[in-house]
Length: 50
Image (tube, rainbow, N blue to C red):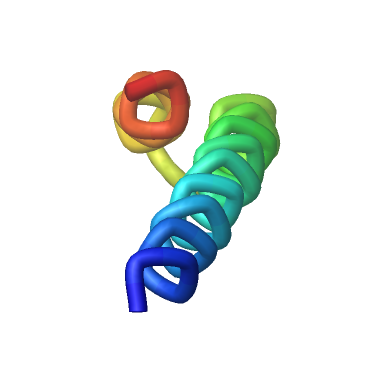
């Protein structure tokens, strides 16, 4: 039981790291885009680094 809980937490942490990288890259693309305001891109980059 304890092992499965640790494995779940480890996988969950890895998923959050991947999601943070995704948000950072998406924020960069939004920031460089001319269609969406640059503030949205900056907020996505901040969210990804959090």
